[in-house]
Length: 91
Image (tube, rainbow, N blue to C red; front, side, top):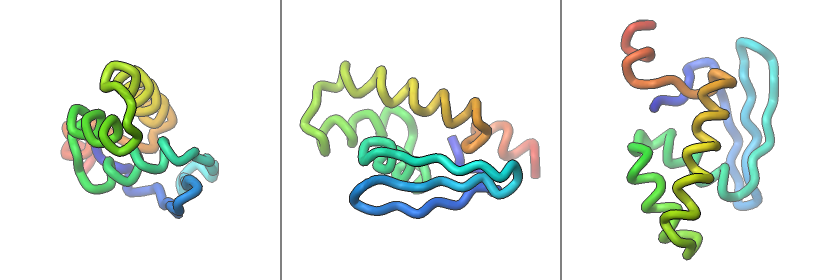
């Protein structure tokens, strides 16, 4: 997954604000969402993100996996992130 080129984010220890420059919407993220967003920006694969969040938040991988996958699906639905294939095709 890649962050859409039309999205900007401000990440802090308390969470993040994501702004969709093309559609004009803004989204607030809690600390977990901000962590996932930061790892997506770094180009981490979903499985790596799940492992990292599980370790950082000291939570079972099974619990984290469902939350991370659901969050990523919502980001994709809002077109804030795109799959690698779609990103290549758009260029």
